[in-house]
Image 1: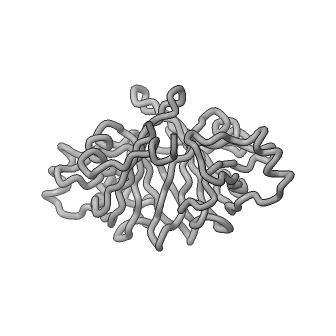
Image 2: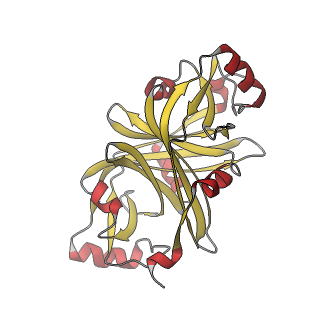
Amino acid sequence: MSQEDRFHELDRQECLRLLAKVPVGRVVYTRQALPAVLPVNFCLDTDDSVLLRTSSGSELVRAIDGVVVAFEADEFDVETRSGWSVVVTGRATVVTDAAECERLSQVGPTSWMPLRNAVFVRIESEMVTGRDLR
Amino acid sequence: MSQEDRFHELDRQECLRLLAKVPVGRVVYTRQALPAVLPVNFCLDTDDSVLLRTSSGSELVRAIDGVVVAFEADEFDVETRSGWSVVVTGRATVVTDAAECERLSQVGPTSWMPLRNAVFVRIESEMVTGRDLR
């Protein structure tokens, strides 16, 4: 069995279907010139962008607003050594439009913790890649 | 309940204890000037560095050998909205010393897939941070 037999590239629709299954992913960005990563709960918007909710004054918002980031989610099964991983790469922006904030407060993610001055952050799904390991 | 009540910073020893519990983490690095992330199985060495095994010709090795990367692992429980996350930040290097490669072939991680020209990659645990969400 070769490496190629076990890895399978996923198309965009399959990636988005898998992303929608899990509640937590990881924002990958740069902080003070070092690679940084932070797990967050999220949901997908109707345009397939990734939506997070966090505090407006958070270090995460300061670091990623207006910047291209990666967002990763995965699931693995240790027993069968199988699983999948999906990465969305795109620009992150704090949602500032009042009507859009109102809409997202109905359909967007709720944070797992109480937030001060909560904002929504959108990561555009400009590039969506994924693979599964069988 | 404030945000501070739910988040708890973990000390280095607690972080390393949690890391040792899980088989898969994520290497966070930069690829062609974009943030990149790849899940890998791993283990901790006796000096607390993170050990991976991959192909010598892999894109991952080309991107991270000699470079400071982050390595993240976590566990979350959706029902209780609790969990933990640990990040190791440090230099990644391909292990080239023959005696060390021999030792790691006994105690190091095995890859979840067949590899061509397998090498071990070590990520020094220069900075270890973590937190749990209760």
